Length: 276
Image 1 (spheres, rainbow, N blue to C red):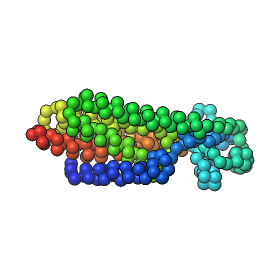
Image 2 (cartoon, helix red, strand yellow):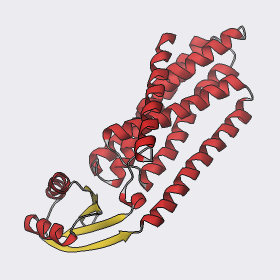
Image 3 (cartoon, rainbow, N blue to C red):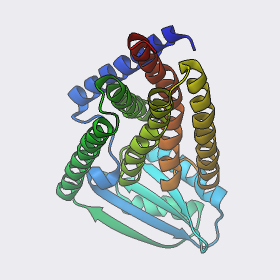
Image 4 (spheres, rainbow, N blue to C red):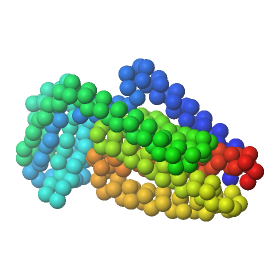
């Protein structure tokens, strides 16, 4: 392992922090928000005779023409089109859709911006609480500042860089992607605890312990990536499950260098200072 590579992970973290800071300053929040967190109208449409690909093509067309957010949801019964919009004539939109694909029925749900603001506040508090709880548990588990700091820094890096890439790709913050961000903490800490436990608590050569942990951790990550990629391919990027899977895939890929380069380098230097 080339320890100089840690400067790449730290540089990406600092760049992501700068971008998110700019986003917060200019827009008031780190991420674009979905309709359920911003307020507006949610239109759910069922079609008389249309398949998944026809509905997906219609969704893409509407997103370009009306600049709205849309996604498909598939069940054992049918595939529906969900559209998130605010300042738009719903009647005209429905007429245009019906000209392309015959609508069987549709429903419009209005989401109060005030309620959305309250939900967003709860989400922010939940993330902060989860992170603080993780910090406390990590310090109790390892009872040493440097190894604990390395684990926490890795988890913080995973979340921060994932948020940055969500902005770049265009994945909004929703209840589904919020859940995936909480899961990111679990995935991150899982591999970091594996690495730290193998190298810190098990006596032996650091490089050998590192290779053993790396093999196990990479197998864990690869298994999760295959499962999440399957979900993404089946449900599509614009679906709720697709966006959730997308966030987790991004985070898992980011976690690999953060754990096996950044965290490992900090642990390696720490153990050298201790004479191991």
